[in-house]
Image 1 (cartoon, helix red, strand yellow):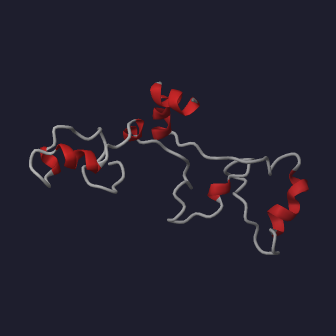
Image 2 (cartoon, helix red, strand yellow):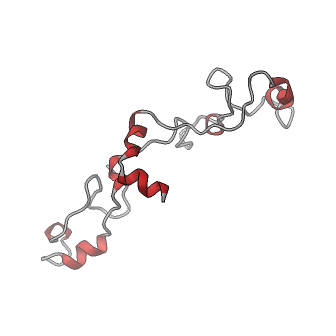
Image 3 (cartoon, helix red, strand yellow):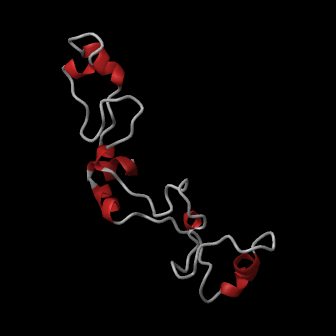
Length: 122
């Protein structure tokens, strides 16, 4: 029920300005020599596949590979539209006054969601 509480209290708004970056165990610091093989050579003798020590003392798994397909490399954020679920297009079609025209429906879409099917929040 924690997620429902966070939505009810609108506590997720802080993620819009300060995204949450996932961190793992502590790699850098007093016990860094324990992970010398991980940090210096990696698993196949090539460059290690760990996040930079300048970013954090902890392993940041989603900061290892920075590319366009890694959607959470800058952390998890939140869009206000996600406080409410989108209403399915089926409901607009059923309730429209003019057949086939969803804009004549007596109900309206939740804020932040488009009136097109299979689209994300605005």
